[in-house]
Image (cartoon, rainbow, N blue to C red; front, side, top):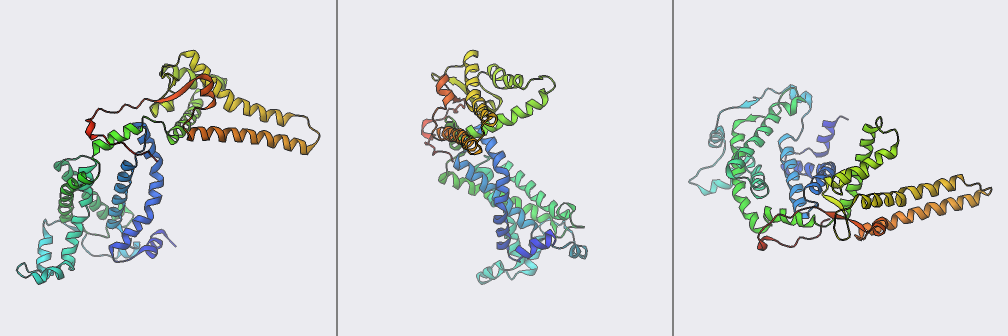
Length: 388
């Protein structure tokens, strides 16, 4: 079964509700794809992932996904699109007013016609196109701090994107557009964004304002969370491997690359490896003073010996020991392996508890966040909750 028939067989319905269900079904997969880039950006800029900001961001992505699916779904078959003879474009401005007059039972002087008129396609399609971008206007004002002019411009371009998607037959996947490009939709969607702009003011009385979210995010970044540490380790590991590829023909010995990346580079950058520099972290003494070159070398050397050299040498010695009894050899090997495993588990628990690791205790050094909290009025600051 092809992709389009599968989508339609799973989700097809004439109502908008089932299209929204498609978006909610798809959202976890999209969220999974964007989570790592989003976290990297947040930890790079703020040193934290604040749950309020994350909630707003993901709700905005979900809204855009719902809006997009409402525009393109349900997907027709290619054969049915080829047989279409309906107009591709409607270029007469405000033609929807004529449609309402001709097709709806609305009579302004008769209240009894109001409710039946809402069920008429000539009216509910107009309301749908307005409501489609109301949330967009709300987000633009509340979170992105856009004024009315920018809100209208961005709403227009979002509408234009939707209309061109329809006109192009879903970016030329189909031989022609299977929905009508309507110039009135550009006006109605832009109007919806403008209406959302006024509703955005209400959220400022319910949720923390953008400046407060910024401040809370930076304040959380003053602490180095476990996730931030792990992402820094991963960044440095990837950076070192990538750097090794470029220096393979320069440094014939791998340990020269190691010294350059983990000692010389941090010394020039005042205590930060490339990964730590990206996530606004630096290595300092217990008194939060800059590390001397000797202190930096000692920290990095002790860490290398404890976490890499000693475990490797222990495994190497066990593998090369001359033991005639296979059972004894297996017991020795498993014992060494379990010792190494427990040591790494203990180190990980120390990270979770935000306690210094063994090499930090020996060298009396630690990590320190270099995030700077912007100055704001004291009454604007609310103590943030811990990041997830």
